[in-house]
Image (cartoon, rainbow over all chains, first blue to last red; front, side, top):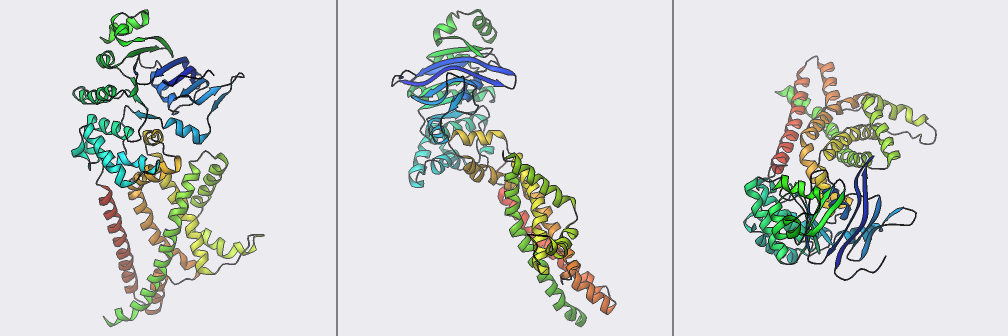
Length: 258
Length: 217
């Protein structure tokens, strides 16, 4: 493998993924530079969420390679065998990324603050007197400091998702992955989550956002990637892709969405 | 009233035996049941199948038979043949039997936790043991309180089976007095004792349920 530049955060090459006999990713390649915000759009079943999940090892791939900040997460040798990094490295490499899910996946038995400090305490061995102020600062940032001691069942969907973002940020990731973060929300609650993500983008966080929010993708993303049928059909600067889609499939999809 | 005072000491003594069997079984069978459940759901197929067979054996034969087997038949089995006195025999049988039931309760609880909880923990860097300890099992505890309460109350009453090893538990003590004095009064007192024990347990479990009611799933 050629040595990647210092700015290359994600280097995915020819990623293949099967669920049983169904091949959902048929050779997806994507490079993401530091500070880039990438919107991944496409019809459901196109493989966009699966691709995101492969990047953070929630799914294992069958062929191809993924490197995160120059470190190999998984690679495929000449014989076509897929090799993942050793478990300790795997965990360390994946921790460079934070992930936000469609269904939040907050821990219901913990308060908002406990949700945020759990991983720093358990995984990083952070000290309580250091991590609590940090968590509180993150809560202020997402506008939920007053919910500090609430359980997640008392929060609205938009509030839950903002807590989930704060929880991911508490591990200080270099890259944030968003898997349809607003798809489970009532329409009037998407704005607060998108605003939080917009603020993150303005801080130059490297982000990949799988989304159906076309307006958000067009405004906030630097690059838009259109996936269909397990491949990337078109990957271009977001404004260009939305203004003048090159591929007929992209055009057909956007006409339906807008 | 005087008669009551006469029969109370042996009944209290019997209650002591009953409580001992109950407490020791509970304290040992709960962690063993949890361990069995974790093996049962693990990806070690061989061990999982073994545990599955064990649970079938323990739930598929009467507890009384198991107790009799350990007390009378175990000494004659080659290699592991040991002769256990009555009390340890009873405890071993109860722990083996109840751990199988507790294991199934734990398994149901663990498998009721959504996959998203594991994924949420994994992307934050938690290992599988950390995920179990900090995320999954605390939530399991809340969900299994009602069936645990059920099983625990059953255990209190099942302790009366130890009479087959001629141990003087609460019920055997009561029966002894009934046969001696030709009065059913000791049965009534024994029933009151059992009811009191289950009342304490019910209250304890309700307190726990209330404690866990601070959050909804």
